[in-house]
Image (cartoon, rainbow, N blue to C red; front, side, top):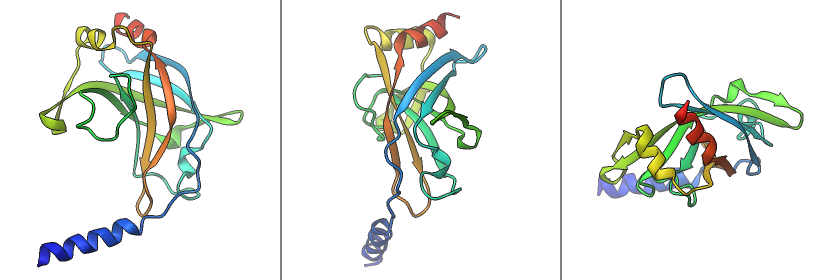
Length: 170
């Protein structure tokens, strides 16, 4: 009986999540490079939406991520969906205004999903080259969450695979 009560309460709270007024941001790729001697790949990109204010004025997102599919399809938010993916935090308070857009940065980690998405393993350079072979772009989306709101998802950012491979060779 108590399990059913918790389920009803959870469904009520999920139904109370508010929508946000921000449209899906259009994202544009600026540049990317490998961070020093690490396996991180830093991406600079533009957005037509200020991510600091997507939920409410000056209400910062709890999570703010750039998520990418290395398999070339649609970017899924389900860790079980893609065997190979990349993700990185996006510090929304460090955005720079550039005309009508804002410029953000994210340090992406590339990984393989294991055990049905319950664990991840970092991809080494040769493995990443193999996964990206024959692909022109890596699709990415910005996602964010805040208490009391539905999750936000931007439009698609296309990162040229050639830039990622070039960064591996530096």
